[in-house]
Length: 103
Image (cartoon, rainbow, N blue to C red; front, side, top):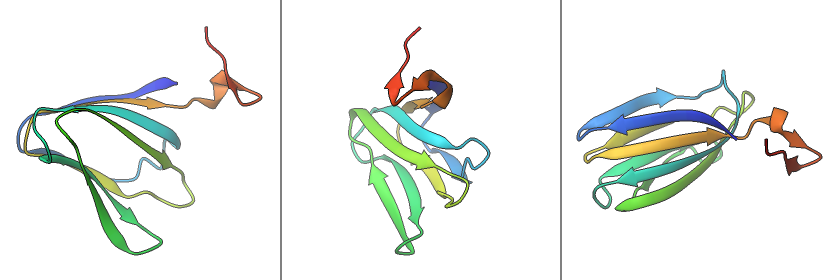
């Protein structure tokens, strides 16, 4: 895994709608929030046409999603509290026969 982002959201902050289609891969984010249900990850479900909002709980949360260039994942983040997110991307250069290579 390689770092894919470190973000600090003060109260009333957001990250607008985007796809990350120029940087495809599986993502894992460790998210810390100061308060329950006051920050979220929202995405558009292209299968159902619905907006899906996943609210964060107070403390640490784990978020996983996949970005690809064939089926865009439109998503955004909003926060009405302090929120920190630390992202990682699985880098295929570090994978051999399905096993992670540690240096």
